[in-house]
Each structure stands twice: as structure tokens, then as C-alpha cells.
Length: 495
Ligand SMILES: Cc1ncc(COP(=O)(O)O)c(C=O)c1O
Image (cartoon, rainbow, N blue to C red; front, side):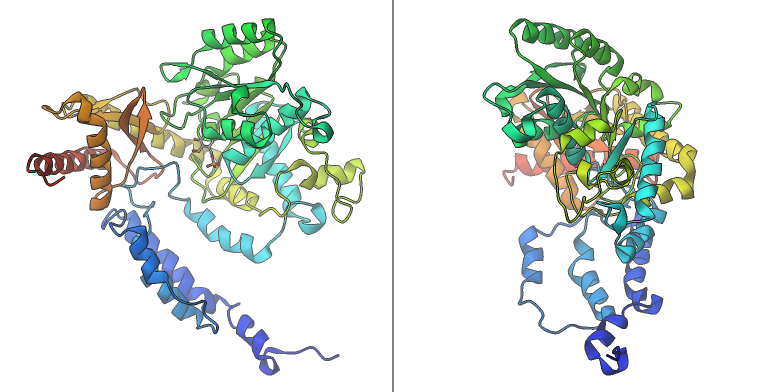
């Protein structure tokens, strides 16, 4: 049968028309314009429009016929780009989402073009070996040996969930067949652990009542309480499935004392230690910050998100295992159409038997490109700069009477309070939220708020190397201006 060509096949012609660099130009130009417009620090950081206003603009029937790519690019620009959060803007210091490394942005198009699925080697003949190599670099960095392995994940939530599935199989060997039973083991974590941990307990059928929360001292897990709790659980005949320590807590960026926690785990039946280093894993690269993760090689599993402090675009998460066989044991799945061979060779290259996802993007390419283009030393310097900028803000706020830092930053996160004179203690929480909302809507900058020791506080995360000490000054001054306006409005009853 003769094959059709674009000239006699209008449908094929439609798709083929979009394959050239020239066709991609309008989309690439949007990216370049976005980068140029935002990284300079001019213009608003975010939008004052509500989600409903944006939704109204987008409402309409599904297009039954298409339009040229250049026109689509124009519509992306007018319908969406004016109202994005501009993370490349140096005044964007909100959530733990990066101003992505430029080389990795362009790599995204290649990942989509080749569309290799990492589930099995036959679907990704060169990218699965690439993933193994990159994971080897990372397990070497943790300090593990030849048995180590892991997988890339959609992020820290999936990485921690998968690690805890492995811990569950270790604790209840027949769990895949018979479930967790009426008296499952407990999971232990600090009060500032990410909700991924309690979520995992719910998802895997342990139930939230089987999570033991250890209080903090100075925003870190109180290791004395941990020790006493593990002894008490043992005395009561309660099995412990895992202890989760956090390296870079979501709220404050604080690092648990992994070395001490590892000692305690060893002393208490060698309980499984998982380190959630989703946020702070980049400290492993830095000679300045490495000490904060001392003891991490004693963990049995580690979660680390390059899409956080290595500034990769979403998504790029890592689950690292001291012994990859633990991951194999976490899933006992068979799927003859995919996992046909069971030889050691197949097992090593096919990852689908060891991962939560089936189809899996080749996000590893972004991570490899980041190391290839910038090198581990420059990435470490970048992490150090993010942390240094947070330290600068800390020093600056210490000199002011209208704001007070709540902790010395251990990474790139800082929480602080707004302390305007003459405001009753009872109104502070509401005012803090109102200030954040007002400041973010003003377009001057963008930050977050959280609850710390029962109080609403402001929170900054530096996720952009373009953010300098001068921007920190701009942040404090901008907050003070908006705060003054807020208090004036409130005084005249406008709030
Ligand atoms: C310490 C920690 N663990 C896990 C997560 C979850 O990561 P992800 O959003 O990539 O699933 C976060 C994200 O905020 C985090 O800060």
C-alpha cells in the first residue's frame, strides 16, 4: 500500500506543519519573552485577578477546528501569561517552586519529543541507563555502596510514600497479599514533617491513628522525646515501621539531627530510618552545608527533590535506597505484557516493578543536563547563594522594629512576624494574613504565610539566584508600606 504524504493527506499535513524549528518559533519566543520580562525584576510578580475572572475569560466550547500554532501562541499570551506567578522575578519568594535553571527549561521540549517511558528498558533503551547512572551519582553522594539504587518520582510526596511502602513490606512481609491486618505497626515522625508522611499512613491502610508525632525543640524533632517514645512503644509491644526525619522542614527549612536519630533507630531494634530531604537534599553537594545532613548515609531510604533547591522545573523528584532490593519488595506486581522476563538483567533495567507509576516521564534528562551544563560545584554554589540570601534577610529584619525573624535560617527559608506597634495580640493573626494577601495582590512581591507555634507568621523561600540582598530590602520596605496602608484602612473602617 502506498504511504501517504502530507501533500495528499491533509490530516498528516496538519501535524507535520508543526514539526520544524520555524513552527516552534512562536512558542519558543513566548518562553524567551517571559524570561526577559520577568528576570529583570520589573513589572508585577503576580496578578490581582481572581481565579473566576480568569476562568470567565477561558470559558467557551471545545474548539472543533484548530488554528495556526502562531495564533495559539498569541492566545496563550493574552489569555494566560499576564496572570501567571512570575517565579523568575527576583521578588517572587513564596513557595518551594523554582525559577528554573534555563538549560533545563529547553530540555523539557526534548523530553516530550522523544517521549521515552522509563517503566521498562525496551521503551527507553538509552534513558533507563541514564537514569541508573544519575541515581548512582546521587547514591554515591549520600555515601552508599554498590547495592544502592532508586528511582525518579513526581516529587517528595511520591518518594516518601514509596519509601514507606518499602518499610511496610519490611515490617509486614506478607502485606501485599494479606494487607496490614488489625494491629498494624506505627509510623513515627516529627511535628514539622511534611503532610506526605501522614498522607502515606492513610493511603497505605495504617490509618492516621498509627502515626506517632514527636514534638519539636527549636523547630527540630526533639530527639530525647523520640528516644523515650520508641522505648515506650517497645515496652507496650507496639511494632514501629519507620522513623521519618526531615532534612529541610517545609515550614522553617530546619534540619533534624539525623546522626542522633540514626543512633536512636539503631538502638531501638534497628528501626527503618527514612530521611525526607525533599527540600534540603542539595545540602549534600555543598561543602558549606554538608554538615547539616551528617548521618544521612545511615538512612535506609532518602527522598530528594531536584525540583526544589536544585531549581529544576516541575517535576523532578528522587527516591534513593540504600539497598535497591527493598524497593523491589515494596511492590509484588506481575504484568506479563510488561514484565515478561524475570532475569537479573531484566530486573536491573526495568524499573516498573519498583515504582508507583507505570508510564513515567524521562525527567532524568533535566537532571543530567543540569549537571552537564552547570556542574555539581556551581549547583552547590547556587544552593549556598539561596541560603545566604535568606541569612541576609534574617540580619536585616533583626535591625528593624516592625518585623522580627523567628529563627536563624538553616537553608533558604525564613519565617518572621510583623510587629506593628499598637496592635492587640488578638488581632495579629488576622492582620498577618491580611498583610500577606494585600502585599501579594499589589504585585510588588509574593510571599507565603504559615502557622508556627500556633501563630500566623510570614514565610519567605528563596528559589531564584537573581534574588539579591537589595531585593530583601525591597521586600521589607514593601511590606512596611502595605502594612501602613492596611492599618490606615482598618482605622477608618475600610477593612
Ligand atoms: C520536606 C518536604 N517533603 C515533601 C514535600 C512534598 O514534595 P512534592 O510537592 O514534590 O510532592 C515537600 C514540599 O513542600 C517538603 O517541603
